[in-house]
Image (tube, rainbow, N blue to C red; front, side, top):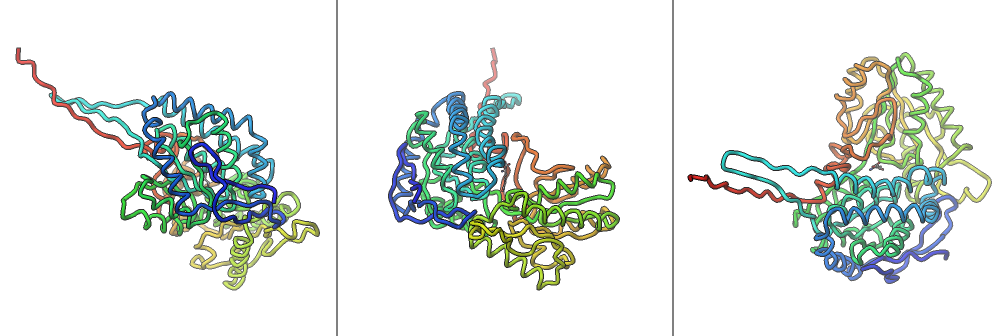
Length: 475
Ligand code: 6OD
């Protein structure tokens, strides 16, 4: 065993509870163990967060922003430790962890410090009346985060939650406890008041205990729509505020006027980044018939090349099997497999890991399961369209509505199509380009609420409106 991942409660590590193994997805080998939080440990974490709440909530926002800036600085000092932990748990390329995951953690803490500090207050004046609002933190927030972008998504929630004056209990995924453990060390190292940030490890059951705990005031979650729905039901009796960013079955629309080279490379990124394990990844590509053949051939070639130039494994054997079962289902539903469809052979220790081949499918009817359910792997289905209206209808024919991409050089079309797509996010001639101030989230099964900028701060705080009657001066 290389590491034991403990909980972090009231400013100290707590190595208690049953142990479960954590695997390296690249080789399948056990590389560490994790302590599992039961009801009593969850209760201790929530109690620590409650005790820390009054003093933290009473700090001026500028002081809390100072703490999150110090967290960002300390993340940069522990950069390589965070890269190592994130790569060990997820099997993601080191370069990606260095360029995206860990820098975004620091950026998340800095961005919300700035946004909170610059937020204007509003007051309303009618004859004889003055109204204004004060915002208060929600209280103790449960932060339940997934395994695909563990550090990026955890800090995306922690930044605004902490700046807004909440204390938190984080539950990382059972597969990826590492970067949360390092963040806990960082928090202790900079002297963040004990109990402001707590971490409990475990499976879905631990997450449920946390979400349902009467001392938890709100829940923020990123993950599958099924788990989101289960959490929603479990907190319904207490009507807790929730913020959910959930699954997607995201469409990419390629118009024939586009720069085809850029569109192929954009599709490669949007389909295969992180092994396709990003809620924003494209799983349905619709290509204008005139360029369908060349586009499909080039995408399939690029997918095949990825086997040698850089593959990321699935997070677990179970998830690999789920992705592979969708490849089998696609073949059974009559798909033509243009690339991939199986398991790559490396002839080295990676053969014990959780890899699947990057896969491009075509020929499935729109209603097929593979075209409707989120797979969350390195796979897309590609189909032709003839008109702009048809492309929009195809994109919108989904129970999900998180993200879409549009590839065209026609500016009017770009705006027209983007505004017609039922999704929270539309990228034009790009993918996953982020401005942290913009609202981020989905419609339909893809989520509830928006994160980002003031939208996050709105979720993590509640306004009280104060209205005064202004007495007339009769003198
Ligand atoms: O970039 C972000 O802020 C974000 N929330 C990304 C989400 C990715 C989901 O897998």
